[in-house]
Image (tube, rainbow, N blue to C red):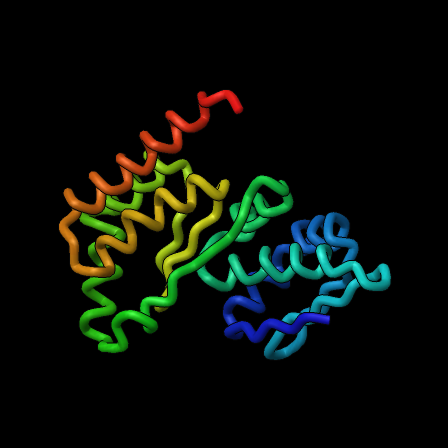
Length: 176
């Protein structure tokens, strides 16, 4: 059994997505119960840890700012979810706001560029930057975001990400 505490507004949004919740239950073979303060995930089949893990990741991605349909991409076994907790790097509120603004960029341009190069989906929500995509795609996006979090310029962040992208692309053509 897994339990995820969610803010009230997230619980209300999740309750409204009954069809998506039914799909999550179907794919994960888990029962999802939405309470007053949390979501409880229980395996329908004994010891189905993967099902609970899948449902937990989808709901955790939703909680970290992804819309539920994007979070549902995690049903595909090639897709993963990860996130960076900005609090771990910058506990100062003013600095966190600056970092999040730099990751998003003017009119969302930085975020969109990172998503277009890496093919990973990105969410900047509360004190988290979340990523959904294939492992290599997430690594590319995280390279750029970590460069920005650590104070690098956008140009430096893009250069690091693009270099990582070129390396991944060239490795894809190597025969083993």
